[in-house]
Length: 282
Ligand code: ARG
Image (cartoon, rainbow, N blue to C red):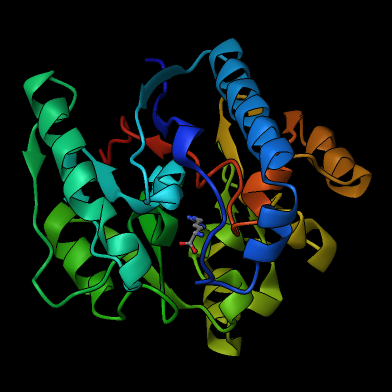
C-alpha cells in the first residue's frame, strides 16, 4: 500500500509570532515576498518528491491568520485509521484545532479514517510531532515536556493499546520530538542526543542496538535534517549536509534534499509538513 500523507497548502504561511527559538518575524518581514515565493517552491518540491517516491498526498487549504497550519504533523496522531486531534499549548496555534477537526471529520466521510478519539479537556498534546510510530519495534516514541504533557503518553498508550516509550525533551530549541528523533524504515534511529535527558538517552540506547543508532550532529539537527520523512528506501528531508547524506547512503537509503529554508525559519522541516494517515500498529 502507498504511504498516504496530509499536507496543508502554504498560501497563508508566514512567520508572524514567536513560539519557539527558531522563529524570527523580523527576518520574515524584511523579505516576505521572496520568502513566501520560496515557501511555495519548497512545498511544491516536497509534494513532487513524495509522489515520485510513490506516496499518495492529500492537500487541504490553510486558513488566514493560522500560518503554522502548514505543519499538520502537529494536528493529530493517526494510527489504525483512528485519530487523536491535538490540543495545542500555545494560544497562537489553538485556532487550528477546529479546522483540523473538520479535516478529520471529512476524512471519516471520505472513508480515509474511521474514528475520532478526544483528548481529555485539559491535556495538551501536539500530534505526530510528539508521537512517532516505530514500525520495526511496534511501539510509539512519545515526546513531552515542551509542548505536550507528560500524561499524554499514558493516554496514547491506552487509546491505541500500544507500547510507548516516553522521552522528556530537555531544550526549547528541540521542542517537538520530531525535531531531534526519527525512525528510519529499517529500524535505524537518527537522533540528536543533546536534546534529551540522560535518562532519555539511556532509554534510547537500551532499545536501539548500537549498530542502529545514527547520531546527528548539532549542525545536522539545526538544519532540520532529523525532521525527515522516510518510507521504503527513500528518505526526504531539508537539504542535508554531506556528512549525513553519506551516512544514510551507506545504509542503502536514497536521500532527497528539499529546499525548506522558509519553513526552518518557523522551526519546522519535512516531517512537520506532513501527517501520515496510514500507519497501522498490527
Ligand atoms: N512554528 C511551529 C511551532 O512552533 C512549528 C512547528 C513545527 N512542527 C513540528 N512538528 N516540529 O509550533
